[in-house]
Length: 179
Ligand code: PNS
Image 1 (cartoon, protein in one colour):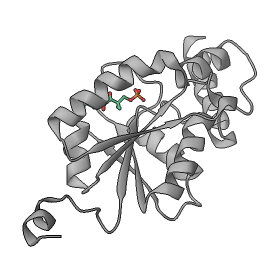
Image 2 (tube, rainbow, N blue to C red):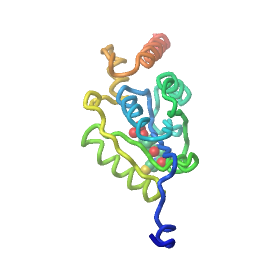
Image 3 (cartoon, helix red, strand yellow):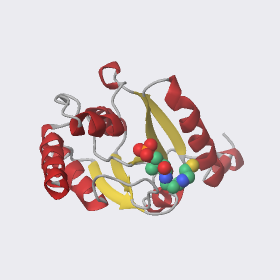
């Protein structure tokens, strides 16, 4: 290979850093499954909670990060961060070359495709990598978990036990406040 073409070819970084951004309000077993599998693919995986959300979250960014840290305690190459602004800027600040996202069903695809293409336009060096959700978790979303739990439905097996306990405390507190 000539020296010229060698300098033009992009190089694989020695350590691949991936960002897994999301709302995580709260983390579900679907997210956890994706993080577990992502942690085996990348040298460093940064799970990043979006801080400047327009939707009204149930848990604060700090609470969501606490839950994530609790659940992800045993993963040496997984870190928990939060970010404001564009995810591509957050990825650049951590020298991440991969943006990890999960696809549960075809209904996720359109939104994910739009985001991936926009992010590619904003930062071409950042590659979005999709993992298909484990079929056992493909129907789970944070929104549905919160709704079912608030209405007294059983959510065991859908979120980590620490998250279920925190949801119970949060629902009890809001009932007390409402009473
Ligand atoms: O868990 P979610 O809510 O599906 O995650 C959406 C998230 C956080 C990945 C997306 O909203 C995002 O990246 N927001 C940061 C602002 C940004 O960069 N917007 C342009 C994305 S194309």
